[in-house]
Length: 449
Picture 1 (spheres, one colour):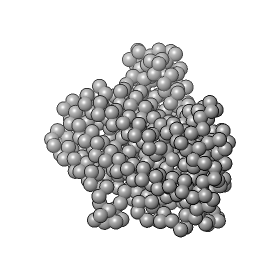
Picture 2 (tube, rainbow, N blue to C red; picture 1 turned 90 degrees about the vertical axis):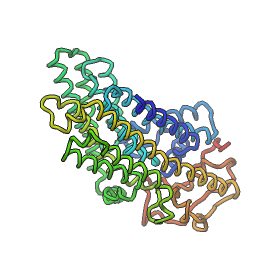
Picture 3 (cartoon, rainbow, N blue to C red; picture 1 turned 180 degrees about the vertical axis):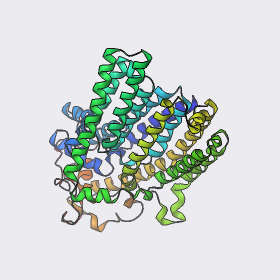
Picture 4 (cartoon, rainbow, N blue to C red; picture 1 turned 60 degrees about the vertical axis):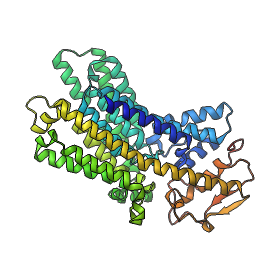
């Protein structure tokens, strides 16, 4: 299927590009990498997310232990790890569902509406958590409960999810329920293998455990100032044009399809997603018409919560499509038609290709920002006051985060006496989530070459 091939090619092409331009250093990424190298140990946001930290930081720490001191190479390796895991998990999901056009369309839509609009903040653990949830549902819906190998895969995904992200408070139970449903169906069909069943039960338990760990994290940090701000911003996803445009198109598609299922047979869905694709193509230039409509990488961080809700909705729709075979409603009956599924998959692919355009536009600006910042570091010695720099102007404002300036400076230095960019700030009125943030990592033995 062309939708599968195009999506996979795009996924890995972006992963390679974003690794080469070290996009993993954006915002918190620089601080996470510098801290890990400074202490030669894993650095996680907090223990409830540590499995993702282990997964993504292990290659960098291994390279450092082997004597690699080139922070450019280490930054590339770190970025590659951050991008390769979600790319690999989504690739796996696409490979599992490629025989069903409607399921393929669902995964491609998730890439266009969940992954690309929130992945500039690739350091966010949610990128891997959402991809793992999609991979797990793809396994479940393609016979995973009846095969030992798939049971082992579900166990691995469940183990990863246990300490991944707070969205598992609802994604975990959803996946556990889907696994139990698949087990029940396999038992009725007489195709259930005892060992496969045991593995599936262990996997379901792991996803329940992921929900429990997520609930503990939410309860523990509920009143922290940082998490209070995060909760308050949960509904500010409208600030992310890359997210809002496909979500609006999907909302129109869902409402009209529910009201008139036969609409799916015509060109209507293609037109709706085509209009969304055209708008996405135009987003890099909208700021010239309306400055407030600019693409803004920090909004990827803001939209991550709503993206999790959307991912859950997509997973539920996929489950209903596969599971509701007896007297299905008209909408599901229409989606089961091969011609409808192929048309949706094609339109979703066009949406995905369009969604890559603003992503590439921001990547191009990121390269310029990184060159500018490194010029500040290598062209000075001692302290460089960020208050005297145009960090609030275009395009620096797209990528600037004041408390990570010292960490980014340490990573970009070619010599220990080169400059360190800092901002005059007491870190009390708007403190970072980690007390050590804002300090200058020593990174002895490391240099950008």
